[in-house]
Amino acid sequence: MNDSSPVRPAPVLDVWCELQCSDCRSALDDLRALRARYGDRLELRLRHFPLEKHKHAFAAAQAAEEAMAQGQGWPYVEAVLARVDELDRAGEPFLVEVARELGLDAEEFDTALIDGRHILIVDADQAEGKAIGVTGTPTYVIDGRRLDGGKSQEGLRERIEEIADRLLAEQE
Image: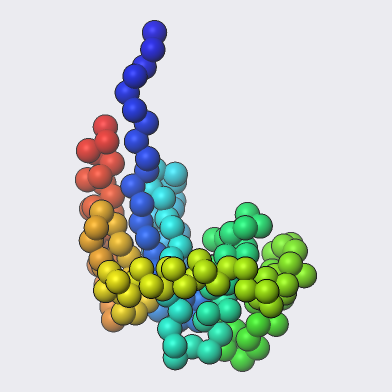
């Protein structure tokens, strides 16, 4: 018997974030809860929106992309966000040190930050964010709805869950 029903991709939650942002650090608990609740039924996609007021945010976004390339994107993002104050003080050497601590190829991180191999990804994310009205971080986009967590994260996870539950129910 042949099942001809198409496999639908998981709904996507774009997480516009910057790794030097204390509000993004505060949002980690919500992101962990969403991952625990939905697993691979909801794709959490990191989108970069480095803010000009944070000196090391652009380099941190590039480093996160290198971590993605090495298969440890979210663990790296969480490790950097958990220590935002150290990033503020130490800058790029801190980004390489976190990679080393996670068992990633730290020399490759250092090279990636020098050769800029991930700049286009970061630039494209930032440009798209500006185009859709992202002004701060964290900002979430799910099902075409932009939810801004830069001022307050109160109730955002619940709103995301409502939308994700509806999208998943529609797929059944």
